[in-house]
Length: 111
Length: 114
Image (tube, rainbow over the protein chains, first blue to last red):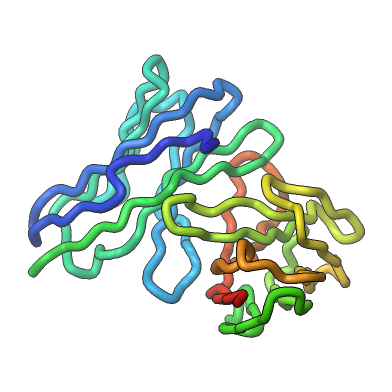
């Protein structure tokens, strides 16, 4: 079974709105939490990442919020744009460098 | 600036046929990976090679073999394809295996097994 649970499966947001994707994990050995973005026909590409000693990380319109006690983390896309339409994967890495991916969220931003 | 190159991009096989997926990277990375992507399952690790000369099983290795031919190339072989192996396959590479390593992915191979 998947060690990183991601929701929702898909979401539709209007241009300018906020997209929120949530992930949860159980394994306390995870110590690095990246998000990958994938456009149709392409491979995933690293978008942003966070360590558990930080509660929030922001890069441009993308923000990761991290709640260590709840073992949850989320991606917020502010001022969503049509070019943000993609599939987003949360992931977690353990101390051996093994990366576990969530199931993915397809985001559609309507004009 | 090729990065990670995978061939072929598309392939259709009949059950029982064999084939090899090729992957090459030009970033002088030590580590290489093969993932499969299925709807609702995310990406699952099939095999990886932490460094030239080593390979290890990932989460879903059954039915696959790999060869790390040299530092640049990492191939994935299906000896007897099954419909359950219909998937999109991604090769990736990273500089090393540290916790915060960035993975660089190829564009994928869409494989259908009939």
